[in-house]
Image 1 (cartoon, rainbow, N blue to C red):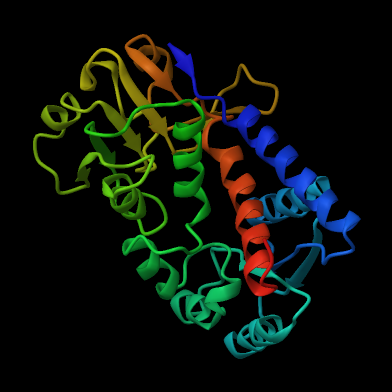
Image 2 (cartoon, rainbow, N blue to C red):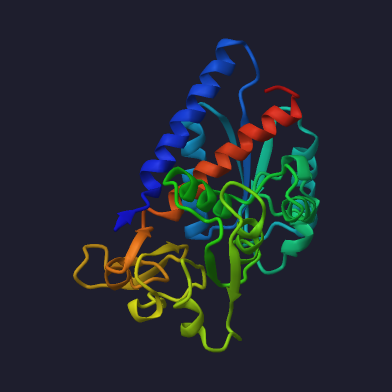
Length: 294
């Protein structure tokens, strides 16, 4: 069993980006600049945004964090987005989700300039991704592709089963892995809450991508020997034996499934760290595109 170490791989990618940024600075070129908007005081969102800002500093990017109160109106948020859209110094920006209930998430995502949409959520970028055109691929699917690539996991001709059909992971993964690309050319089956005979399907999989948000859902009796398992889920579970009172688990029953796996991602330390690394990669790409440089 080989562990697909997202923490180490993400650190490698950040180091590569830092070298590129150093090179840009030495040439007197513009430093990549990522902005993030966060509305309200959601604890998890604040943690995520702070991690993104910290990652920017580590690779030498400039970063701007715009914190807005919970009661911010939709119009005020759209106004902030409009300002960032035209600010030539900002290469890319993200709006941290979830947003407060009184704000229409779709309307907000549609307002982001597709050329600055480093999260890859704008329909223009999703459409380009589906057509295999150059674009921003959303960070979690992009991170999974990169992890498979760097560990030389063969996907061509393999049967990939994806558990979950979210717009953020399941759906884009099904498109990307079936495309003609280096990490692609797979035969993909997407399963969801209405899928019948799920176990029958997962037992046929050479690669399983679990992204359903149900802790330890995928068990050893649901996979064949030498399977590759990508665990996208992360859930806090109460655990009195831990100092902080909880432990983090994925959608895969790791201990039992790992015994049958050729490759498997841990939780934490698998897909999660890759997401931030790929957001930085998208920001570097945005800077290159918006300033027409290599």
